[in-house]
Length: 565
Image (cartoon, rainbow, N blue to C red; front, side):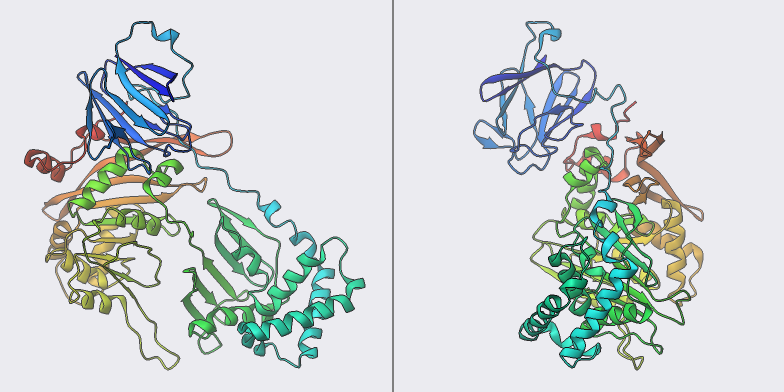
């Protein structure tokens, strides 16, 4: 048989279907087995599988849908000769091959069938940090910093203000007065302004120093920067595309840095000083802020800001990034659908929260979801949702509400699903108990290097609860509560990938049993230093999937568990 694709009635490509079992992807992005380069087509739009001469087409969660006979596909379609399926401007069908395959139209690049290894998806290279901070070469030279400092102090003197009084300029009317004074000052000192930078750029930099977050303001406005790390007044680093780079921007001095830190945290009801030298907070846009000042920070005040993308990522995005495969996404969706308890494990900055957000999208819209977080990062689109956030103690050491308190409380809120942003301590016991007492389908994350370590860490966190439980009882609780462990890792090239999906299969003696369902096999590095490797199924069939298959409640093709050799 031949897969025939036409575009608006014009022949586009003819591809011979393999005689052996196969699984192809159809979509817009490079790397799809059948590439359909049109804007109406999703990155990964549909999936075509063949087994024993039976060909099945299913939609892959596309925006525009896959259509047959004027109706949108809601389930898999068994293709027969003569059937026509519409994807965007393309019509797809099966025909007998009257001509040799060599005569087919030149096809777009496609991955060979699973019998041969295909190309490895690679992460996009990070943007040129040097280009992004090209103005830093001028704006943060010693000469320019002196001019900015002079104008800064001149404006404060003209308006009879102190540095601390700048907090009042959150009011728009007061901010207008400041900008008027700023423009007058720039006209007065125009002969001293650096010739290598435009006046609008210099004006914005000075305005950021006065009422913004100083040199951090332009960085915060850059959408592709994911993390900002300040190690003292003159060492500011950013992470972009998984790569870390020094920016070249700096503060006037240590005092200026601490003032900016206070300007960030005080509107959030937090304070930092010698008596309280460490603070953890969240900006209005959801960015997470951590600051430590001397005497705890030995080399000067430290500030870390983790930004979160405005756009909520989907499985298509993660597949496009090479973080997972379509088969893995389908399996995880099935696991969430049938209410399996999932633990996302990984290191700092590995993408645990991002993956948790993606998994939460698989929760049916009619269910009630309660989220518990130390610092609110999850972005769920469900209507019936309650978001809870822990609270630290105030300056008097009172008013603290821990995650554990919120987990216990949320059990009284009639949740269908409980999502704990991160288990760090004693709340792990309450989370496990919830999973074992009717709150199936719960999700959480933990810091660990591999699935086996994640189980050990859970055991240690349960011990923090203060109950003298025997190890066997704790392990029995863990084995009964956790169904899947998804290991997320940030690789040396900065890319973030799921490196293992493991099923907890039970307990034998004092050992919790695990079996890998999917793994990532790293093969080395290419000439650009990017990790080369591929995801593959191990051939192990999850216990719950086998049960679903026997009961007729399985929504995915069993071929996703077939290893690609």
